[in-house]
Length: 525
Image (cartoon, rainbow, N blue to C red; front, side):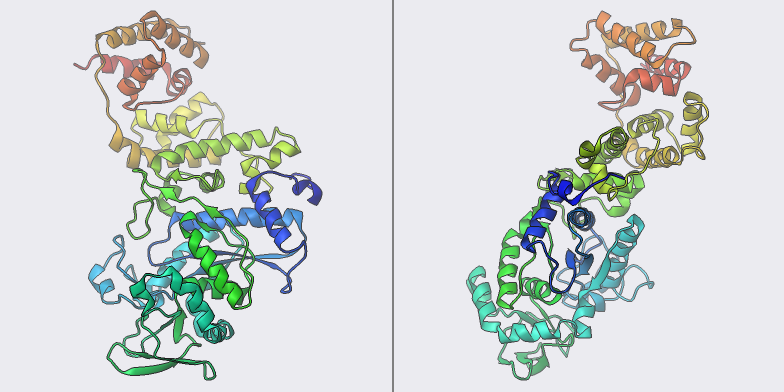
């Protein structure tokens, strides 16, 4: 643990501390009337849980932890699901498309679960997937369902306030809408008593004294319903502002694409008598083609996909690093972040207090990073899995235990976990992208020479000896720049454009195995 006074914490430049100081200043350095500071993250469960939702929770948790270091005010974190929203379209990546299409417009928690019968609704299924991951990661949070908030009456007072302040809210919203939409817009979206759908219809009458609204239902009849008790929900910007007011939210971050929405919802919150939360706008994630990730299109990584190939800590590091910079979120970013986390963790235990507080792992592990021994990089394990065509981690351990005597899955559980992840990554990702090329005449001569040099080295030769001979071979055969020689080794021997430090890899894989690999490639026409 790092010894940290509140005074020292208030001088730290890491972005979670910057956000925590901003929040404390907004509160005037004191606890709010409710006695605690409420952090909120939002989740739209119309599609399968998106990894960006995890990003909001982990980043907000980092700010929350930093806040706890500069203030004694208690905190809570709410993960809020907008599961009362009507389904606008069927996501491409869910089963039973025809069945789902029959429920367009229905609240997500009223739509049958297309996956299985273990959850009552589509919304419940997606909520459970989110909670499962958050629980697995160990987040300290409270899950809140929009449907439950509306139906239980928790929002009733705030909804009646919206009805009272209807004109003020319309003054805020109408200038932001297209002319055609202005004619039919209402902050209230009644739930049809006939079809059960969320209706985007104009209001015919408002009765603040009775707490009701009148509208034309889908069958052409006039209907009057209370705005309370789950008979209505709010359009999303008024909903956001109402929620901030009703729950007294103090901090919530949002994507850069929602900057205008945050501003509008903040004005609505003030119109209701509340104070908008502090927060910041983070940049969006991009897919492998540099396009914005969409939940409905499913063109990004899911939480489960990342965890099949990488550690939870590596995902948290991805979220920590440069949150205001757009980043590619695709398979090829996982190995680097696994190894970067290990590097930061190894450095942490050799750093002084000030350096530790600037280290990402302090924020990832809530101020108490573990001591974990990782004698081999994930990148090295990936290359070993690739060259061995490994079907399981036991194959890798045959090489690992020879290279590192005394190691085993029992003595090094982290290394065993990484070996298993490396096999998954090789089989699912790397093997599909491998492309071996045939060496040209110059490259064949250099490879043959390298094999001869390696063969004559003594049995005590080390990885450094292998690396030196590899360098010398490339230099003597006129490869300029020398990196083109190493690119040749990777492309011919490993079927990939880049790879590990060759001498270290040879020490792990074995000299005789490497010679067999080289000579096998030379034997190919």
